[in-house]
Image 1 (tube, rainbow, N blue to C red):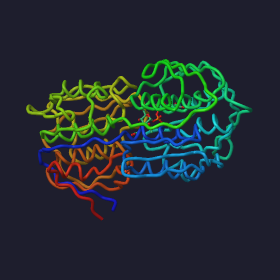
Image 2 (spheres, protein in one colour):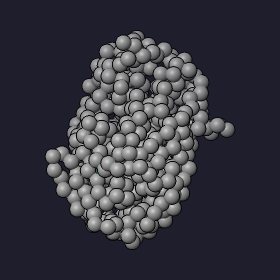
Image 3 (tube, protein in one colour):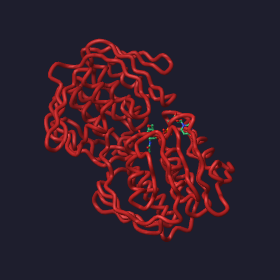
Image 4 (cartoon, helix red, strand yellow):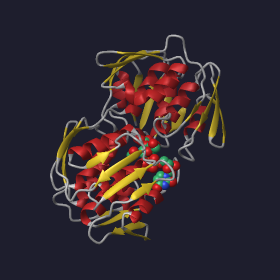
Length: 417
Ligand code: EPZ
C-alpha cells in the first residue's frame, strides 16, 4: 500500500523506541566484504534499504542470514565483483561496496549511482582517493571499472569537502592496504565512528576515530566480529519533531542525546524541553515553538538529514526562521508540498524563509525523498483535517514501523490504498 492518511490535531503521548541507524547499518554490512569470516550485526533496523543492501551483497556471493534485528554476514564465497545498475540506482549507498571489493579482491565493477531527488551526488572524491591508493579507475558504460595489481597502497588522503560516503569507502579500503593511510577532513558523523569501531573489532588498526583526521595501518587480513549498530539519531530527531509540533510529551527509548547535541541545542532555542530518563530522553513543548534560524553543516553541525523535519516544525512556529542548506544543492523538494498544506515558505537559492502560520491544513501531498516524506508526516500531525501522502515507499527506506510507533502515541494514522 502506497499512501498514508493522517488526521492531525492530536498531541502525541507515550513511548517511542529508537531503532538502529540506517546510515550506520549500510556501511557496516558492506564491511563484511573485507573478510572471509562471519560479521554479526545486532540492533539492525528492519528497512527497505537494508534489504536492498543484503540483495546486493548476496548477488556478489556473500550470505546474509537475517533474524529479527540481527544479521550474520559472510563474504567467504564472493566471486562476482559487479554491483549492477538495477540495484545501485535504487540505493546510492551501494557505492560503499567499491572500496571493500577493491581492497580484498583487487577489482570492482560498480554502477555509477546517478543523481537523486536531493542532488547530483557525484562520487568523484571516492574515485580520486582510490586512485591515490594505487587503483586504476576507468568510467565506461555507466560503470566504474576499478582494479589494482596486488594490494592498494597506503596514502595521505585530503578531502576538499567533507563526505560521509567517501570517508567510509576509503576507511574500509585502507584497512587492507599495504602501508599507512591518513584521511584528513574526514567526516565525523557518529555513523562513521560506528563503522570505524566495528572495523577495529575486526582487527583493523585505526587512530583518530570520531575526529576529522584518521590514521589507518593496513593489515593483510581482517577477522570476523560482533557489533551492535548505533542508535539512529535522525530517527530520534524526527520523533522529537513529531512530539514538539503536536505539543505532546514523548519518551524516546534507546536514544542517546550525546549523538544529537546540535539538534537538541537548536530545538531548545526554539522552546522544546528535554530531560534524561533511565531509558532515554523525554521531550515536551509546553510553551509552543518560536522561530529560530538554522544552517545545515557536516557533523558536529546541524545535520542536513534533519533540515526537512525542522522546516515542518518552523512552519508552525511563532515568528520566522531562515533555513540554509549547505550540504546538498536541491534539498527543498518538501517546500511546495508544505506550502500546499498552508505553510508560508519562500526559497531564495540555498535558503528558505519560513514564516510560522497559526494553522496548517490537511491536503493530498506527494513524497519525493526520504526526509521530505517524513516532513509531510510531521506537518500532517499538526494540521487541521486529513492529509493523504502519496509515494510513501520513500518512508519505508528509512523509518521502521513509522505508523505503528506514532499510532502507539495516539496519532490518527494509517496506511491506505
Ligand atoms: C550520506 O550520504 C548519508 N547517506 C545521507 O543520508 C546524508 O544526507 C549525507 O551522508 C550527508 O550527511 C548514508 O549514509 C547512506 P556525502 P553521502 O558524500 O555519503 C558531495 C538520508 O536521508 N560529494 O557526505 O552520499 C555531495 O554531492 C541520506 O539518510 C561530492 O561532491 O553524502 C554532497 O553535496 C540522504 N563528491 C556532499 O558532498 C563526492 O565524491 C556531502 O555528501 C562525494 C560527495
